[in-house]
Image (tube, rainbow, N blue to C red; front, side):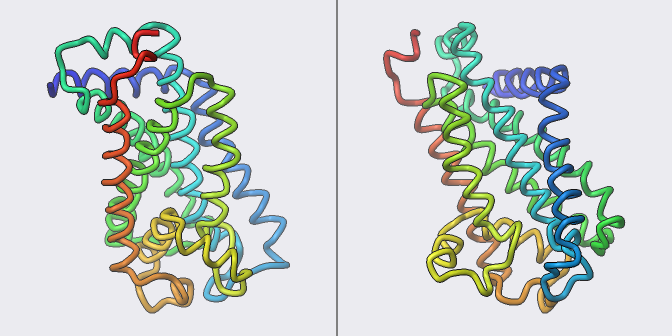
Length: 258
């Protein structure tokens, strides 16, 4: 059982690292977003408590990196089905939850590594970081990576084509990121947007990341959900997404043999 989890985890990591286009797109695109938004909005929009928009957008960029890595990594589920590899895994004498866990752990490991690389830009962005905040941010990053990887895995398992998966990404996952408070604070948003941000689980993950960097009582965390609530929702988000990922794998359908 654990050998199967390790084998799938190892395969996901090696497969992604060998594909340079995926490595570049999952890291390069958020970096470009951060640089462009930080430069374009540095003079026109600076949320309270920070010196620049680039500093405010820094935790949101980490969330974007994790989301994009999860998207570009879990798309291999669709490719594995087309290549026949997935059918071979499904008939192996291992629990199906181990298949889900191995794939999700592989993707979340990649997402965490990409997010940790961006930590090096914290001094440039003006984000205060020390050993304590780095450890706290790493814990939040791990939960966020696992939750989004499980979400991406669940959606990819239900898709039959890569084009359909990209469509879901644009109409579901990207709005989820935009409404998380990664780009702008909830204060001053339209009431409808405020409700959508409140029910967006990624809002609480981004808030927990801001607490990890700045701590409670800082101007950047004013108006956010409490630190305890943010962590509780993030943990619950990870648990629910893994449960959904396991549920879709346990469900036996005719697509398993296709």
